Image (cartoon, rainbow, N blue to C red):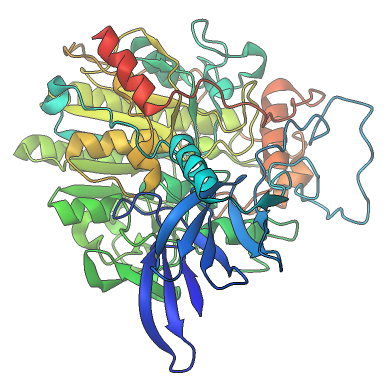
Length: 609
């Protein structure tokens, strides 16, 4: 019997008569490399000589010689092959792809202005939910079936080269510029759910659409000032679809097969949480079932949501790199009504979710909770510790900071989306100001992005999101249109701090070196105060009882990130800014442009330098 092991990129050979493991076959595209091939389905040829294994993470099949028990080659497939069957005559392969890269645009998606679209099926509609729409982002994840001829040896050799080229398996690693050895600290800020166009769409130098900008200088002056002063990165994409996989991609450069297959159930039409618990990021380890142990420490069990090497903090722990977490992968049940120093009691403290966190977490810093203010609650607590680092001269090499309030709410009586954005913006601006006036400024970079773009309006693609690289060592006033993604930001962090890649994705993706410079420029930054009064201030504007879509948003649960129907929330945010009678443009899912293979990018950098 053969069993695919998704998280370890192996296939187990089991003697079914004795129930004993007799062998383990490595089916990774690059043996002994980072994991992420995700073998999830398999079948044996009728003659018993070959085993075909679907590698969901590589968009390929591995062809295994069962006599030798090693991989003979690979066959390219469509997106995320989840199973494979061999025809009875052994001549053809039937491949089931869970995702299909040919899904195309969604002109009849939610909120489309078109009048020629067919009506929705009323029997499928669930009041207050959006994901019954066949062109909603989650519903657009279509499967496909491929029929492939079994290749001969020469064809298999050519197909293997295609798979290696498609996945950049042999691409040269982009070397870190030597000058950046001066960077000793990375502050990695993870925010929530905005697209590029929503915040930067009207900045004239980038590839934006001004008609889609919701948060301009009045509510996001610091984001926009930082993008103008440093690199305006306009071709950066969230690897994730939603927060369930977004916080996994943002902290381990991967989403396991468990996460990819389970999150659509959580985001299905019925009220979220009614079908299964949300266990992708902020659940205590013991509340989930253990799977494989951490690769470098068998005593630490991993959850099904975690890959075997763990997360960024596990890599830092393994390499002896100091680290600190502020609100990421933590739960905070309170509402920040108590002062920070009173948040250490058991009923109102940040609950740790991983044994590796220990005293590496600021227990006073609230995790995701939109009842807590970014600028009035989270920033002061971060600043309190930062001042102590400044006093002692000892700051962690890696700080992971969650600033979630650009997520916003739509509930009547709660702050308006622009007030939430102003709250988030002011916190970020003050963090940058403190950093730029500190002893650590010369040796630090702050990297900022969103965990996902959550299907918001963007004229390029609904996954395109904001990214900021803030440091004396980053470019000034330049537009960087290199194709980057979440994994690019993670591997840039890893390379700067001497950490190893965690998955095939951060191992192969483009580094963000084009946003950096070889010479530092040291001007201080002064935070801007938004014109919109930010949430956290008693004078912040609130949604009126008759605000656009007040009835729909009042039924939403904001106790956890993305526990709301995303299209409805995006529409409520749009109308709160643009007016009750405005129409939000449909999301785009048809273009991810400008991708440059690593080896080609390396050549261009060598030619430029």
